[in-house]
Structures are given as C-alpha cells and as structure tokens.
Length: 422
Image 1: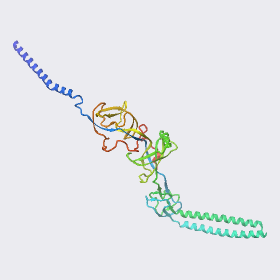
Image 2 (image 1 turned 180 degrees about the horizontal axis):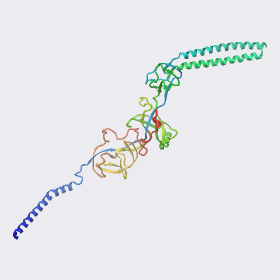
Image 3 (image 1 turned 135 degrees about the horizontal axis):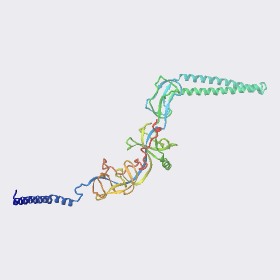
C-alpha cells in the first residue's frame, strides 16, 4: 500500500503539468488566434473579397422600331407556264435554262406546215368570195339601170340585192378564216408572254405537243419585283390596318440568323379572312429584288415594322434582370458602386430594350457580371461594351434596326399552311 506522502507528491505533479498545458494553450491563442482576429477586424469584411469585374454600357437616346416577326414564303408576282397553243411537233427550243428573257422573245418553234396550208386555203376562199361579190355588185348596177326603164321587175332587183349581201357575208367569213389561220400559224412560234427568268424545260424537240399536255414547255417567273406572303395572329390586324392608313409600312427580309437585312419592301395587302384553324391572317409585301437574292417558294424571316418610338431611352437587353418584384437593372455610379434600380420596360428585342422609367440617358448599366452583384457593392468596370464587341462599337442601335415589342412578339406565331405551298 503506497505511503500517503507519495500520493501527495503524485497529485502535485499532475496539477503542475495540467497548469503548464493550460498556460501553453493560452499562449497559442494569444499569439495566433487573437492576431488573426484583429487583422480581420482591421481590414473589414470586404477586404478579403476582390471587387467584381463587370461590363457597363451607357444608356442611350434614339429611335426604336417596334416590329412583329414571322416566317414567310417568297412568291413571284408573275409566274407563267409556257404552253403550246396549237398541236404539232416541237421543232426547236430556243432558250437556255435559267436565262433571262424579255417579253416577245422567241422560246420555241412548232412545225407550221399544216398551218401554212390552212392559211393558204383560207386566202383562196376569200379570193373566190371576193370575186363572186364583185360580179354580184356589177349585176346589181345593171338591174338598177334596167329598173329605172321598167325592164326588170322589182322582185328581181331585190333578189339581186340580197345576193350581194350574201356574198358580202361570205367575204367577211373568209376574212375571219384567214385571220384565224394566221393566228394559228403565229402560235407555232412560242414567244415569252412577259419578261423574267425561264426555268427548266420539260419537253425536248421532236416530241408532239398540244394544249392538253400535263407539263408546260417551261415556266417563266418574274423575280423583280417580288413578293413575300406571311401570316400574323389576327389580334394584330386592327393595329396593322391603322398603321397602313397612316402611311406605308416597312417589311424587312432577314437572313437565316435574323440579324442582317436582305431586302426591304412595303406591305401591300391583307387577306380578306382569318384562317380559323390557325387564327392567323395572311399578308403580302412587295419588294425590289435587283440582286435576285429572293427566289420563289423560299422560306424567309420577315419583320413588319408597326411603329417607331422616337427619342426613347435604350439599353442592352442583357442589362434587364427579372425578379419576383419586377424588372430591375444595376446602375454604376461615379465611385464604381452599383445600385439596384427598378425599371419599366416598354419594348424590346433580342438586343435592346426601351426603358419607360427608372433610368436616365447617360447612366451606366451593368450588362455582364451581374450574378455576384448586390445593392451597394463596389465593382471594377473592365469594359464599356457588350461581351464580344470591340471598343469602337456604338451602344445605340443602328437606324432601322428591326425589333420586337416586348408584349407583342409574334416569332412563334403559327404559319398558314397555304404559305408553304408553291
């Protein structure tokens, strides 16, 4: 059994080492943890967080076209099937496929020998009837002279007069036959009824052609001017009609990416009824096609300008942020501090938006890097342009740039099936 004095020594040693360990821990806290806490207190909560890098663009003032978008079909204003007017052997085809032809230009020849014979026969009959008419008129003169001397009865005189009228009718009929034979002969030379582009030929020389053939010799299509038929929801018709009464409405044909304008024209007509299956109405626009970029039956992107908002505040569409409380933007002040600002958006497209209220012209709005922003945060403005744009680009949209009204976009409007048919 250990001696009591030995237990007291052991207890003192345990207490000594415990106190020594506590003193060491306090020293460690004093030199490391306290210094780190003081450093954080001095630098502040934002000192360890770098300022967010953002791109900001200045709000501009300008004109903003409000448009409706749709898918349209290019239609020729004049598409003519060149068909024979008479029956016969196709002797020659006098055009190159795809050639531009003028009105009256010879396109083909049909064997004309039988029609020349018919014309000769009609001329012979005319000559015969003219001779008979001349003889009847001479006889009538003699009858009239004899009638004055009462040497010819009145009945014989009247009979001779009727004979002259009969031959006159025969001569007129023969002249009509000559004219008909001449027309038939002229039809053996197939001419272009209008100017345009001649398509692929469907019949080769040596074949017999007639008016009842299923396929025409070729199709003649006019390309300049040309039209585009497209459909829009019926809810826009009243507004479109009102705009048409105020003046011509501009129609722009865009490329496949809907960014560049291929051609511009004018809205000319609206269909007389709305398609009950799709709820859309068809419209036609007339366009100049000097460079012949538009071909019939091609599908194109159409933008119809409803109105132009003048002298409005315009910002990039990417600056508009959506939240439960509504639309807002982040405005950068002169000290590079951002402030969340509620805005009212009037009209927009894929690139720009019109601000009815909330910001003024000249204020800078954040267009890139908004994910990490909060109201009152300090930022580092590294660019004054949209992502991917050069510094030389102007922030204002070019004049006449097509846009879509925010609440009136019609890009997804159904297209009338009739517009897709050729």
